Length: 407
Image 1 (cartoon, helix red, strand yellow):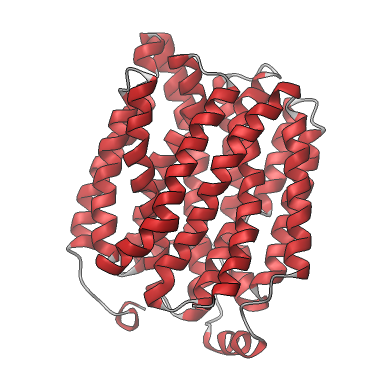
Image 2: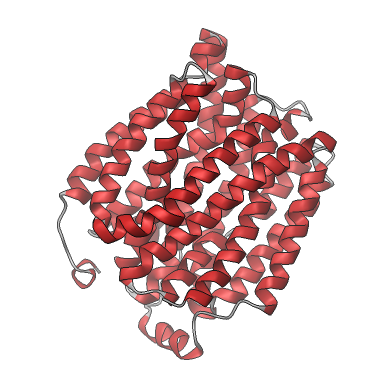
């Protein structure tokens, strides 16, 4: 495991996620400043994911062919331009355009994960991918709180800072980050890889594969449930507890701290002691219980307690599922398959905000704020309880096949 390269990609991901987390919790409030409805807020968040749904597998496949570094430059460059546009937005339409532009070039996380697989072996891969999760969590410790504080001066201020961070990240990648795929390895991948086109059919074929298919299914349904939590949390906090953007930022910073502890410290020890299948099963069960607890939280104190196991299980699943996927396919498919994984996650972030917005708006109107704000969380918990049974059948007790047999 090349620690220098891991540190390099860690810094790139951290800076990228810091800019992302400055903006994400503020988007509902930014949209509300243009008189957006709950449904429109959900669609705004979903627009980014819808664009990423199309772009992530393409960028992942291109990174297998042309290297990780040039595709990271394209991705972060698109993020930089989108934040500039976001800062100058003066209408809801401009917010949508900015988020769609960011989504169309948003393959940076899956490319960074592919970079990690290039510089680690299977034994150390979980620990390496855990560093990506730790960078994500660190970004969410600082970003939401800083963005919430800066939002008191106007929502454009955090957007300008996010753009500045993305510009610095471009320089960091261009001047410091080495390529992880050597020309010889890219040539070998080009000769090994079959000529496949990216299409809905190729996605369905991946989902049917005996080893990687159940992992992709788990990635999708876990992502859908967890995205309901992420995208509805700001409005949930506003309606249930009366929290403003700054207070929500502090709570999300707490979640980020928990994520860093899990993925930066805990994942390495867990993957050394337990198999990927075991970690996926028990984390899925813990996530189901935690989401139900979140939905029914009667106070801020209880909410903060519930967020601990929720963050733990989410951090483990985010890391271990992708680690297992990278071990389930040949080297020439790693970038593309992680791109498919990112695409499925993007699909959940298309569906979850719209579904969550509808559930929240309908249930609040029908049952009032206290009961209505619980409905999205209860739905997410029920989905995860079903997923527990799926993981038990198809992963935890599933057939133990080699990659060669599976592909």
